[in-house]
Image (spheres, rainbow, N blue to C red):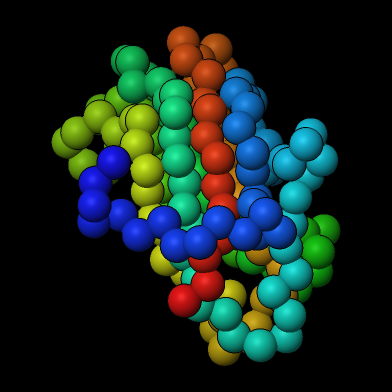
Length: 143
């Protein structure tokens, strides 16, 4: 791992997804239960630490990990405030396959001047039959 990645202090209460492979789009889970965190009614500047241990980078493969906020407990009013695209370079904006690694995704819970109190992680698998399952962990570190 690069010494330039600042993982912060791991707080068990701020884990958005524990280890476990997925092959279909899904919200992050901890101990198989969908996980969201209530950040409260004030602005929070944080970063999501995403540790990807398996991701498909074969032809046509793409997975997107989104940090989402909502003030409606994710029933509606959902905003992506940080995005990590993984997969085959031909499917991504850049020119390089992106896969296994540790990534920092900075974000705030303020959208257009309004605080969104809930946060979760959501992964989108765009390939119907991925060659490789997406396996990642995600936790929050406040700044």
